[in-house]
Every structure is written in C-alpha cells, then in structure tokens.
Image (cartoon, rainbow, N blue to C red; front, side):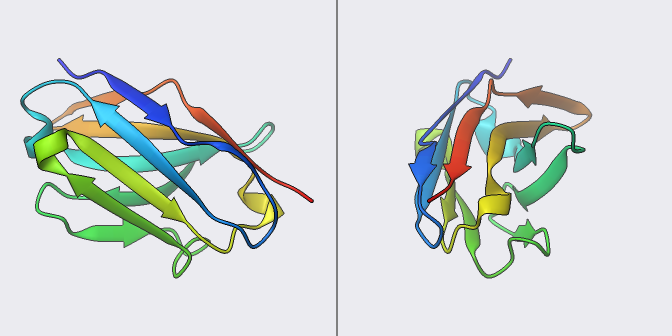
Length: 115
C-alpha cells in the first residue's frame, strides 16, 4: 500500500520557481508510474506531468519547457521543478502513483503565483 505526502508549495511571483516534492511510502514505489495533477476551483483536474518507473517523462502542453518531473527511486520520491511560473499555474497540485490498475493520491499542496 502506498501513501503520498506532497510538500514545497507556496507563494511565488510570476516568473519565479518552486520545487514540489512527493514522498511515497512502500517498497513498490520503484514499480509505479508517478504523476502530478492540478485542479483549480471551478476547473477540471489537469494532468501536468508523468514519469515512468524507468524515468520516461511526459508533460502537458501548458507546462512543457517550464516544468520538469523527476524521481529518485532510492528515496521513494518524485519532484516537480516549476520554472517561469505564471498566475494561471495557481492551484492545488496533487501527487499520483499508479501501480498496475491501482492508483493513490496525496493530499495536495497549494501553489500561488501572484504579484
């Protein structure tokens, strides 16, 4: 069973950077596909980035070139480096782990991009 805890959110000015961290429990972390999602109030949940257990990454067009997802299997941790942040990036970001047909969610961390 996997438990996920996000951290690293906060307030940043437009053009700034944040790094989100998702710490996962369980020895099967290295078998999982990891992802970051976000959902702002009144908007649908959006897939931001995914990374396979081998490190292959994919990104939503809205964040491509600005965000980088990475993982450290030895630490059971996935990261989202967020650069060139825009006000429209403001929302709660959620970590997701998918293992086979099962998936797990963290509680979310708030990112606010504002002057």
